[in-house]
Image 1 (tube, rainbow, N blue to C red):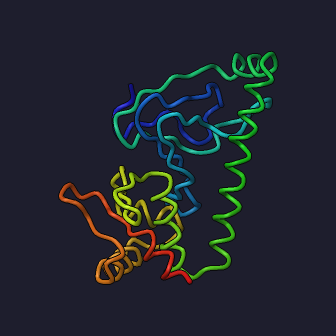
Image 2 (cartoon, rainbow, N blue to C red):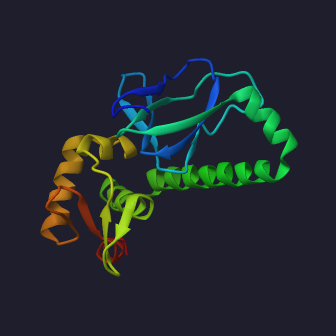
Length: 196
């Protein structure tokens, strides 16, 4: 059990284990040269990490931190590698997971290059609705994680002020709202229309 805020590993530590999330959420992030946090991924129950470093001696490529109280299972990397060699069907599933990660990263890079900051925030909210949301209606999705404005900014390399200003605009346009517990509700249809 890892308590909210605790680190599972730090960037640069020798890679020793592969982790699987039984319950909870994990934030994977890096620090840029100015020590600003750049969130690489948010992983849910059923996820595994890290996504790189198999079959070579290397270090953990980023920080892994529990976003809430989290239960993990782990396998030492050398045991996991032996398991994959003798279980090609599991190896194929891992390749699929890694392939999905590559496609996601390529898509996010494309968003960074082709869209302005406002559009990047809309695309981020749609991605969060897809990966971290519970459907309420055909159009409305409630995020099941409370992301701070700083978290959202760190996901796209923006500022907290820009996120705050944009979220205020989206609330005025009835594209987002918050429920009584503070969880964001996103109208995915309106966000998609705004991007057209």
